[in-house]
Image (cartoon, rainbow, N blue to C red; front, side, top):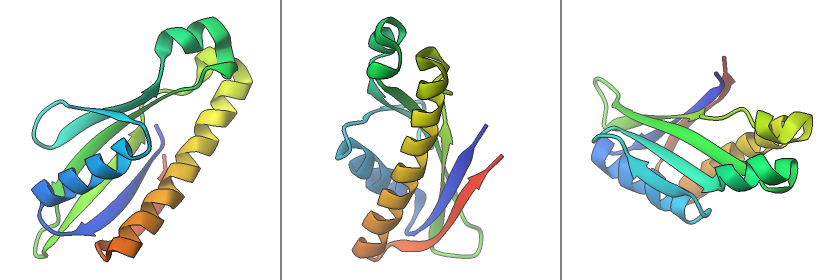
Length: 123
C-alpha cells in the first residue's frame, strides 16, 4: 500500500481539522472512523465500475498521530483503492492523482505556515 506523510505544526485535533478542510476543498467527502482515523472519498464507486476509467473514484485512508516531544502531528494519507476497476488507465490515473494531491497539500500547508516536513510515497 502506498502512502505519504505530512508533519504539521499543532496538536492532532488541529491537524485533523486542517487536513479535513484541505481535502473537502478538493471535493473529497471525509468520513471519520474515530478521533484519529478517517476515510476521504471523491467520485463514485458505481460510476467507476460502470464507466471504467472515465468515472474516476478515489479513496484515501487518513491516520493522525502526535509526534512525541514536539508540538507537531504526523498525518499519513494512504491510497485506499488501486483504481483497478478502471483498468490500467484507472490505476495510472489513481497513482497520478495521489502524487498531485501530495504536491497540492504540501503547497497548501506550506502557504498556511503549518508544514514542518513532508515525506513522499513509501511502500
